[in-house]
Figure (cartoon, rainbow, N blue to C red):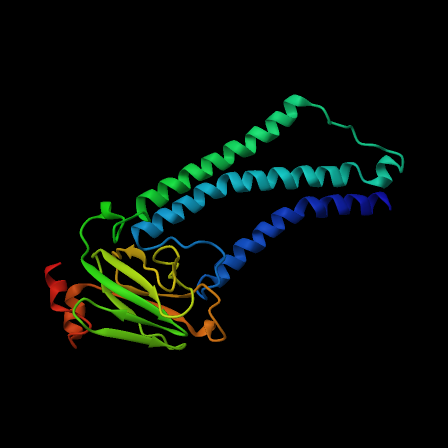
Length: 267
C-alpha cells in the first residue's frame, strides 16, 4: 500500500465515527415527525419528561464508553496493522496487571450502579403502585379511565359510564382535559399488548388477567400518537393510539356530553 493510500485510510477511519454521529443526528431530525425518531422525545407529561431527563443522563456515560472503546479500537487498527508492524509483531501483553484489571472491573460496576440508582429513583417516583393507585404522591385523580386492549383495537371506559372504541388504522382518540391528573387502569382481553404514546409518557404492558396502571398530566392542548408495542398478532400494526388533550372550556364547547363530562368542570 502506498504512503498516500495509507494516509487516506487513516483519515477515513478517524472520520468514520464523526460521520456516523452526524448521519444519526440528521436521521433523527428527518424522522421526528414520522414516529420513527430513534431518540426519546421530550414528553408533555411530567413523568415522561423525567424519563427524557433520565435518558439524557444515562446517555452521558454510554457515549463516554462508546468513544473510549471506539477510539482505542481505531488506534490499534491504524497503529498495529500488519504492513506497518510486520508479520512477526506481537503486541505488549497486559495479563497479570492487577491494578489495571481491578480498574476496568470497578469502573463499569460504578457506571452501572450510577445508572441503576437513577433508574430506581425514577421508578419509585412515577411508577410505584400502592394498592390500585399509581404514583400516589402525585395527588388526587381528576379523571380515571379504564383502557382495555384486544386484537386489534382499544376501548376507553370513562367514569361517566360511556366508552369509546378505537379499531384499525383510523384510531379514535382518547380525549382528556389539560392540566388534570389522568390515571389509567390497563387491561387486556386476549394477549399481551403495550400502551405507549412516546410524547406523553413511558410504555406499560396490558396483561390478560392482570391490571396494570399508568398516569399522565398534560399541560398543553394537542394530539399525540402511539401504538401497541407488543407483537400481538397479524393485525398488530393496526393497533394505533391517539390521545387528544384540550382545556375543559373547549371540550365543553365541543358538546356531545361524551367529549366533556360535566364533572371535569369541577376538577
